Image 1 (cartoon, rainbow, N blue to C red):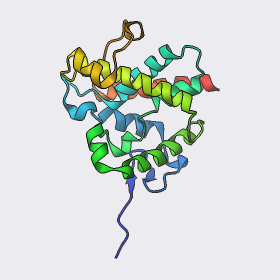
Image 2 (cartoon, one colour):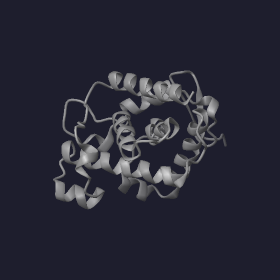
Image 3 (cartoon, rainbow, N blue to C red):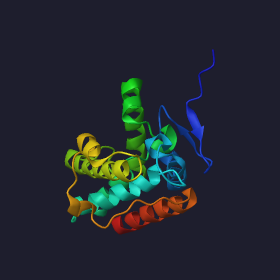
Image 4 (cartoon, rainbow, N blue to C red):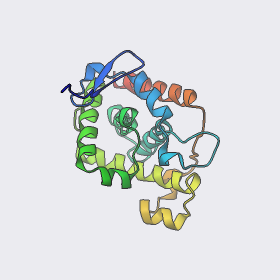
Length: 197
């Protein structure tokens, strides 16, 4: 019986083996393109465009920088890439991840490690950094829930915690065509890599 195919061909021409991903098969253009077409909230958001994982990731990086203003560029890059595996595996909402079970987490961890190594980060980032990225992720989720996904503030506070208004002041969610988001994500990655030297 033939082995089932466990790799995906990317637009760059790379073949990414999902069971054994390697850093050499990862390109930022593939990540940016994929994430720009993956909808957050299973597409159940207001607006003429889906709110993409790429747009979400750009916001999380901004929020992370606000939470940790003196953090080095490498950890801001880790914040930007926090959902990068979703360019291949999609954005599953939490209830679906729970239903799928531990296999999803293992796949996500393998892809994350390969992505981190590809861009000069440690395979596993420090727990303190991961915790701050998660905090930024929850702030973003609160903003998305209240501005795009139909949650009232009380409900969003219950699921994501009540945000410090100073951390989200002046920020607005962007809904734009996927190709614009792709360009913004690619440019931000390049800027952070350049800052890292």
